[in-house]
Length: 167
Image (tube, rainbow, N blue to C red; front, side, top):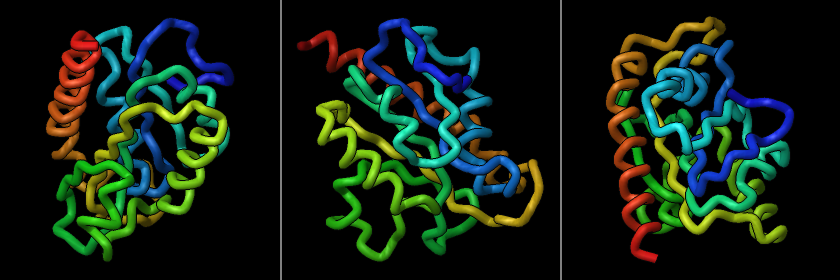
């Protein structure tokens, strides 16, 4: 859960949920993060980020990997899941916005780079939205994807641990 100060425990990996949980599917990242609580290794830090902002910089400091969970509108079927890194966008998905908060992720990563705090690996797991109206519940299509997001995040952690042990 996000606090005013980053957690002090040492972890090379942080999972950050992005979105506004008051606007249905826009809150997918925060809902997914809450779904992950208690289901992933304790040394992995979980942060409710709401939006990409400089407030997240302390949570990136010293991390080797960050996984953002977010929502996007790529015109696909509601609930479709995407996994990419920000550098992939220009090469593979030029017409797809990075997320509903796409301006902010680039700013956050540029600021982290300037401060020498950018993690070596940045992954974004995002779901295609259906409903951005007011409300605290996800659409059924996105709600149904939460177990799959857990699988994807666990795979990201496994890959990170394996790479980290090879160093």
